[in-house]
Image 1 (cartoon, one colour):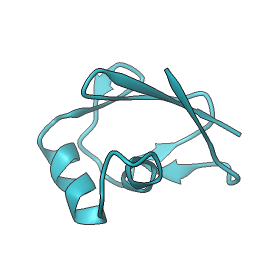
Image 2 (tube, rainbow, N blue to C red):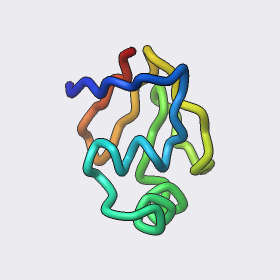
Image 3 (cartoon, one colour):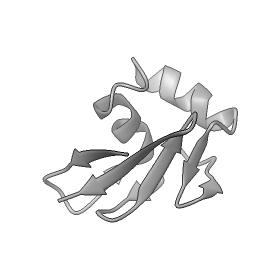
Image 4 (cartoon, rainbow, N blue to C red):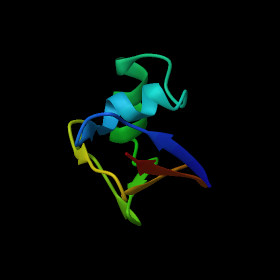
Length: 69
C-alpha cells in the first residue's frame, strides 16, 4: 500500500492518478477510468471528477493508494 499526501480537503480522481504517477496526462487518466480499471474504496469508479478525500483508498491494477492529509 502506498500513501499519497494531499494538502487540500479533497482531490479529483484524475488528478490523484497523475499525482501518483499512474497516469501521464489527464487524457490517460480519463481512459483508465472509463475502462473500469480504477476502484475507489472497493467499487469501480467511472467519474473522473470523483472527489477523493483523506482516508479513501484507490486501487489501480492491484496497487492500493491511500490518501492522507
